Length: 205
Image 1 (cartoon, rainbow, N blue to C red):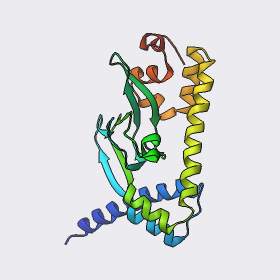
Image 2: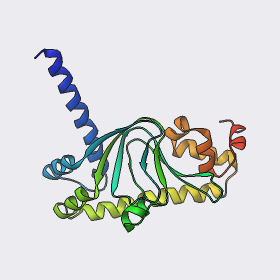
Image 3: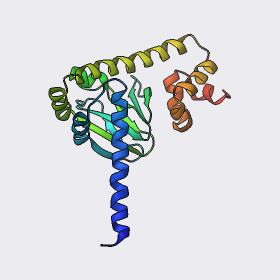
């Protein structure tokens, strides 16, 4: 086979290794994995590429997976009583994401999670996570701390914008959700901030 073929194969595996290591880096912020544990986690990661406007999770389905965003942007949303979309959160590059309530309570999801751009994801399903819990005793602690951090960040943001003007809320959003600020459709940002698209269009930063 040609040298070009081997270069392409090498580049492919190098990219995948780098992506998997981003997952490990995020975990290691909370839980320090040894070399064997790192290899174990990497062996259970499933690489997935989803096109724009693709649903990672559908409402009324049971969520049995946790994703990590190597590249891309997603949002969670639901519909109100009259059929309007309500954006609940944005998930940005370098972070884990899931429907926490559905996953941890093993209940039907009340939200959709969709891609806003083409996304490269690493996914851990529940079977793999159960194996990690069995072989890495501290994994449960990692889940608890990460869940608490994500919940507190969103709650803190929501508390701040409740007492802020539309302009101040948008400024805070631009700092807290920089990627979504630059890439998400304005109608989704307006829904997340609880303002009308018209109001958002009049705000200048």
